[in-house]
Length: 300
Image (tube, rainbow, N blue to C red; front, side):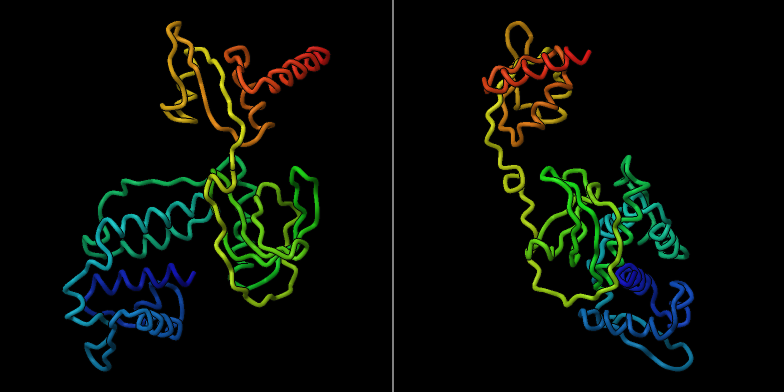
């Protein structure tokens, strides 16, 4: 991708006094014309790059600018590489690993050093997610509409959207785009999308608002929960809600309080603790749990 290559070219220029366009073209496996376009893009971004013709000539960053290399510190470069490495964990390719090898090959100590942050964004659904992510990225890059069948709590439907952003949030992947059937921007969860394809229709870029992804916006809460957990559930409560979610009682029980957002999710979550939890509030959910247990007893 162009952004990856621009980062790579800038890194090379920061490490070397001068480098030729043919050398860059060979290193990044593109044409010389592409390298010249990339150099022009870097110049437009405010990087003072100069080119010199003839023997000993080539491409370099102005000397008085190279004195201050804080544009990319060791820590910042490690963060960039960690981010690029994490993308490999999603799509199953080695595209970003190859870029890192190219940047590190023959470089100064600016690019060396241990990677202390390793990010793995893969999931149990990697086999189905990777092709979706690649297809959506292609649609965004080419300005192509997408079509898919979508499953939501309200049912299933065929959607056609103009995709603008791929988003990783709440341990899941989403696409943010303009939905033709809703005539508005919508957030779609990739795991609920099937029969995903490019429609072949180009779309004109809109003014795109960023999605409001604040937890209180997506998960507004509203269900005041009070429950009593056995002491050996402490690790799960800490992992999922933090230390402040419960008060330890004299008998060792854990009095849990939280503001929950979805009734069905709350019931499912409580069921995973089996006999180790007693729901105290809200009282109407206590009755619903009793009803569910009676129905389950009939099944078994």
